[in-house]
Image 1: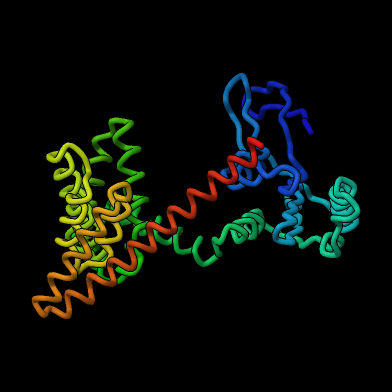
Image 2: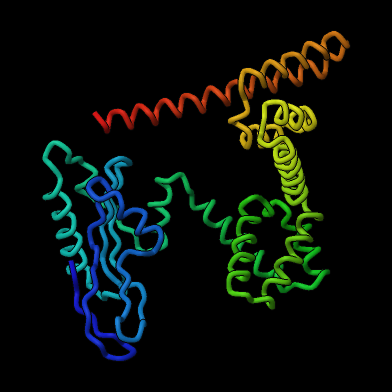
Length: 316
């Protein structure tokens, strides 16, 4: 529905769309809009002032048997008005649900007292728990502290909170760097790049990422010299990094198109060569790599067949 709004900054009257019922069974696109903060946002067309509107919302996800409601405290409703409001929104969802799809849980919506708890419950259906959210919030706080901290404080934090320096943390840092670079803000960009360099050399995750970058750079360079990523080039780099299972997986994922019959023939020949040399450790390691890569290839082929099958069903 649409509601009339008076801009608190310039007084302009305009209308904005308000979603009070988010039924992702009927409108799945509303879930992404809710999680990205694009639901119930009003922006004045005259001065650009805007923000989130305070509105009651009912959320229904039939796939996860989730039915809940949030009534903001800002609406200042008494208990009777609040219960009446909840009843109206609940009835609206039930009226728009076919009788055969109505379930008992829909008669008693869960009440979420804050918008944060409301969103956390939605995120749980995506496999994102409250603990994961809290961890990312702590990582963001740590990153912002490290950007301005002196060397002694930074060293202490890196030692004390080393477990928080993971792939997600580096992804946050890269986003900060990209944003500063796009704005040509060297005052922010320089300390960010310096922090990244420090983390790459002084943290376990940083050293892991650096090894991955070096391995991928080497693969790309060899592929360029060979006028393309060939099975022989991929095999050479996997054998070179065979003692690091993580690097082997990353290289294989980057070179999936080169994992052909020729590649596996070459890998089998290397296993046989190590057998003749009596190197049992290498034989076991390479045999395990071959099994894992064959499984990876099979999984990709299965996913491809599934996608093609779904496309064929749509065409039919």
